[in-house]
Length: 327
Image (cartoon, rainbow, N blue to C red; front, side, top):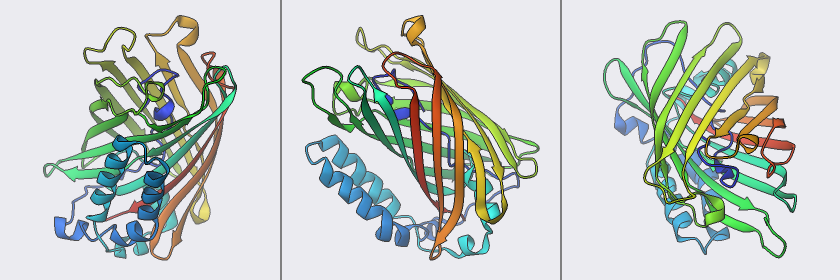
């Protein structure tokens, strides 16, 4: 969830790859959930995390955070029976809902072209573990953490590219287990000052509120996610007052294919009025598939910025691969 200004690009693309169902859902015992993710983690996720850590060995914050993320998913589980029973169409609707009671790990790569005065390429890999909890017979608490790994081009002549970790964003949604036509969730969002360089994030604590609402008539999954974050006693020049609106429109096709549009519209209220808004327009295509018993969701998007601050270019691209672990 975008919470920083144009110098803090890590929070782009926050609400794709979500999932939710309307029926009442109950959670398996912890011993079963522990066995859900370990095989996929060992085969695919662990090598990725280790590779990223090796790439950024100069960043203690990055290594520590990724090792913690790896240990969380390593302790999850090994049963894929539910995945094997679900059709691609059912999995697609789950993957398109931000507050589903489904453990998942989206890896979302955002590329912004012609970024900055030197018109370089900005790349942000958002590692986004989603972990739901049943807090009562009637309510779920769905957590989503965005861990941004940023490669920012030079912003001035003679300046080099900066690689490292941005500020982590944690959001939790309280959502009723039983929903009617409209599905909703609301809860806190928090910014952790984990950026490894001033160019990659504000490096300040932030807090705010986030809300999502959606509906799923027929082949459609349509909804919006809103959030606003403010700083907590930030130093002068690092104030945060950042608004995000992400609408998502998905139309599901046979065999797990779907059309999708989920641009992230942002407003930095601390910026000058002409530098405040980023308004992209575009979309893409996605596909649900399996590798063995592991369910995966792949997407490719392209967006054109119809309104933007000077530091941003006209075009951006989003690639996502989501590991899904339905109950």
